[in-house]
Image (cartoon, rainbow, N blue to C red; front, top):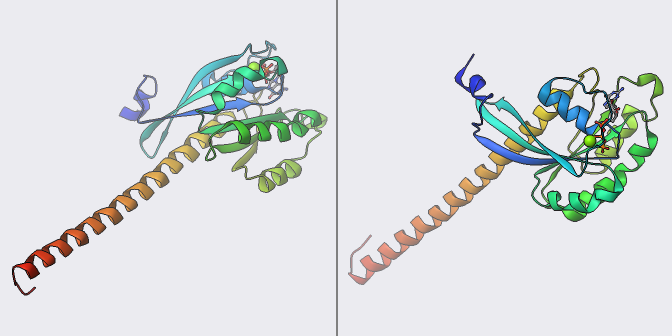
Length: 219
Ligand code: GTP
Ligand code: MG
């Protein structure tokens, strides 16, 4: 086991990002996060009251990346509590259940809410949970994937909290998306620093020439 792998069990992290999990009540948000983090399925439905805070840690390019996850409740009555979390989140995971057309139709409203309440650069992903219930399917993979393509959603996948299919993978993908975005941002910041230092260099060179001219030095 590498040092980084053993650090996964501690509070250490190189990068930490905040994300929010949203979607209708009962689509499996808590079971899915629970499956990814605790690696077990808690089948009994106990609706989330307000929100639950959890962390998921993984290794990307030898760095420990931690996701701070707000698992929110889908009930209408608590919506005003959730809005407080949108503002600080770097990623929103919208979840529907593949056996509930209604929960998929409501994704339109969840998306609208994210766009109104959150930072304009927030990453938005779409998850179709309960894919083990294929015989009860009401939403096809294709229509959800089309929704993703048409709505600037950066990632879509189907999962099953019950069987574990893709549960860990989608949270790892969230970490990867945020880690890559951070690197892009850092590279842009470095480039603009280089540009401004290049400007400073030419400005100071310019001043030196001016000084030299004043001294009558030929350069
Ligand atoms: P709220 O907290 O009320 O918003 O609901 P939630 O979205 O967190 O749903 P939760 O995770 O509590 O799951 C609701 C019900 O769906 C539970 O009875 C789970 O057993 C069931 N469930 C969750 N995920 C799956 C899944 O992948 N497959 C199947 N078959 N059932 C699931
Ligand atoms: Mg819940």
